[in-house]
Length: 485
Ligand code: NAD
Image (cartoon, rainbow, N blue to C red; front, side, top):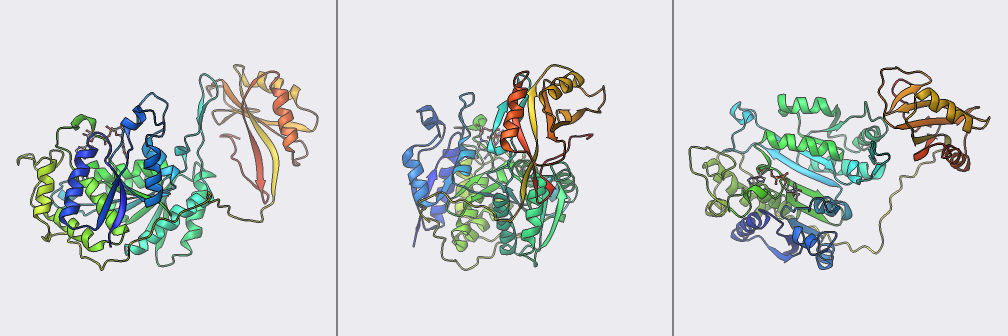
């Protein structure tokens, strides 16, 4: 039985590499049918603010699977990236990127005889990709970094399941919880909670900067790594570099209902229309998709033909032996098609029996809401009011104190997260946005009304940039101290 999927050819080199990949699929008798959807730059230009037509949205939501070429988001028009929007809107919470050394693709590691075979699972929806940013003063922009318990749990559980499926023995969590104690702290805490469900997988964690250093010095240490969105984005491009560049980096955006398969690279406008683009990353993404759909025999056949072709030294212009002429996109695809049925000397993939393909089209009637229930006692114990001010910390403290009633105390003032009052250094340079931290004198709880009143009083003298509650959860503080506090 064949499966119907949505296909978007993409922009730039997208249509060229998609045509090559679909030709290879056809040669391998892949049982897929395609519904082409209208997405990308020209649809932004035609006035679709999301970069896709309503019909494209309907098709993708109906079929549950999108195979896409890279797409360009017009710059300077204030529209959001279509690639990020697609991942977020359809809740493809796990971005899986597989990296392995390919025979015929020379890298520093392949030359040193160090094979690389690792998978990065990147959280795909949250973090700074929430895209919630505000210009608070003319000089100060802030972005919200959103990390949630349900979102972290979804991607981390996927990473453990993927590790088990692939026969990996370990999974590491990359993070920066030493600095971002509440956001990365929550991700890390969730990682170890879920790790308890997978005792067969050795779990460990590593600070992301140390991870980067180890990935370039001892990549063989790792099998799979799960990370938050932005850190995962950066680390996965680093891994692409380890195996020969973006031309070899596939990606799967996995959700419970809709999944998207695409190459990591972009539209490569510099080589668009020349017919010389390397289709390998999109082909590898297609192979990931075939496995996801359960067509493991076809996936293995195509992968073996690709590996064999690379071993033969066939290459596009972006890699391989410069002394031998490079193949263009079509010739490269023809070589793979011609090698269908061949087995590579190294890294041959053994076809597993096909599994019934996933019925991905669960049609929802309402948005799913997940709340991790806990019998937690929550209290508001204070407030951080962010104000625009050009004065010195002492002057600001004096003005702020005049606005507080006898039950409230000014706890500290910080600038760019560094405490500048009641103590601080004269060498701390300031910008025109301060944080004023206020608590009850007796250390008691404070009501929302009182908080709004404090902000209202301060607004007589200052522009209020934002207000954040200081909360305790079961007596544990849910906010960070200022540097130096
Ligand atoms: P890019 O990946 O398009 O190009 C970077 C470099 O790699 C270029 O020199 C390009 O020629 C080369 N390259 C990329 N893919 C190649 C391939 N298959 N074969 C041979 N060479 C290849 O990155 P960029 O220039 O930063 O971005 C260009 C556009 O792509 C931007 O509009 C960006 O927003 C978009 N983009 C889209 C996606 C996506 O659709 N998922 C991802 C990244 C960038």
